[in-house]
Image 1 (cartoon, rainbow, N blue to C red):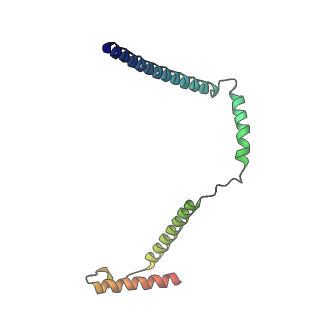
Image 2 (cartoon, rainbow, N blue to C red):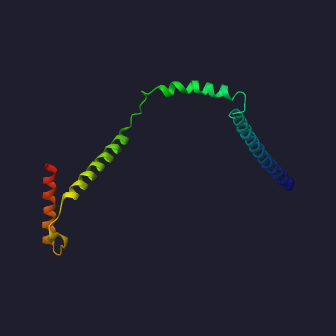
Image 3 (cartoon, rainbow, N blue to C red):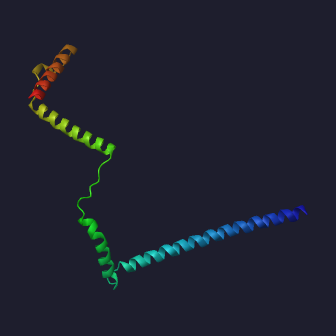
Length: 137
């Protein structure tokens, strides 16, 4: 009796497993067939030799043309986008200002070879004073 119960439950499990496999196979084949049909239909509709092609293009153009003519549509950037844009502008301005100052500034001869900290500090102070004078002008 136990062996018959074990065999019937094993048969039931096998039948369920085969049913699941069959359902998966049928679903896969159906989705491939559907995708193929959609692609074939789209290809035929967009074929310039198709007699309905001109109708499709004209109807699409009629629907899109008012959207193209609306020039008042402007997308407002959100807060984080505004912050990023302002930061980029500030970096560009600072870079051009620094480049224009660096093209004018000539450091003293002793600042080309800074061996001790006193010379480094003096040269750094000279640079900052010159930069502050440049920014005032």
